[in-house]
Length: 67
Image (cartoon, rainbow, N blue to C red; front, side, top):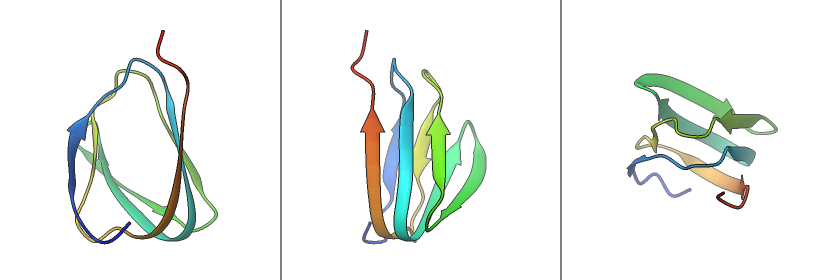
């Protein structure tokens, strides 16, 4: 993550976001969410989410194959 904002998206399958270092700033279903290093955040299938500006560090994204 380099501080750049990423626009809204949603997926047909759940998505797991694991922050290895730094901090992920999200907007999930219209609400701000901060995810710190070592934390895992699950975005349920179909939920609109976006990466807010200022997110920095290393992120691992795990997605289930879409049905």
